[in-house]
Length: 207
Image (cartoon, rainbow, N blue to C red; front, side):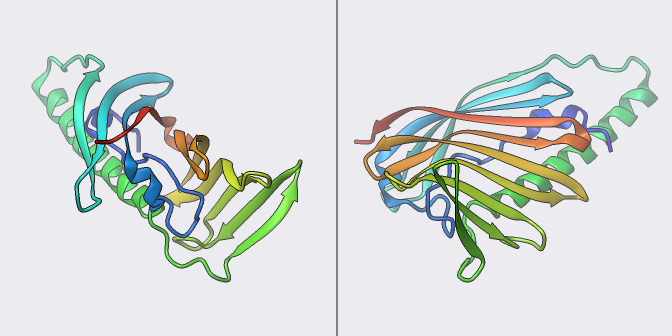
């Protein structure tokens, strides 16, 4: 299936991962911060949409997202009515595909109990935490940890969606001693030539 105009409707919630692989967004220290999240969606190397959101928290600890801006690439409408109808149908199918991908990736934000599924090794001076069959059979989570600070440095999730390989690259940055979070997430679906890049920045303590 070729991914078309529906990329303009997609907003992924890949905001960051905590160092505990069991609950990737659960570090309570992160809830003291607000930040901006930029979501950029590209197909075949061309940026189709860019969304900027402000991330805050409710008094009960629920995450809130306020859309600050949205920029969509211009799409030429087919002149012939039949072609216009076919383009609309393809866009609808693509939108459903992206929504399903979003639901699949959201499952990795709050993982099930990984007891007995993780292993720890050393490679190039880094501790490597791995877990297999995390959310579905055959998937794999890998997190590289600085053994001195015990904070994550990089991570990767390898999984599948709709019979397509999906790879998520994670870059962690420290916010304060004992707290690192993902400041960049790159999700790739090579079969469809789709890349979704989420960049988190402007962290500040909430009031």
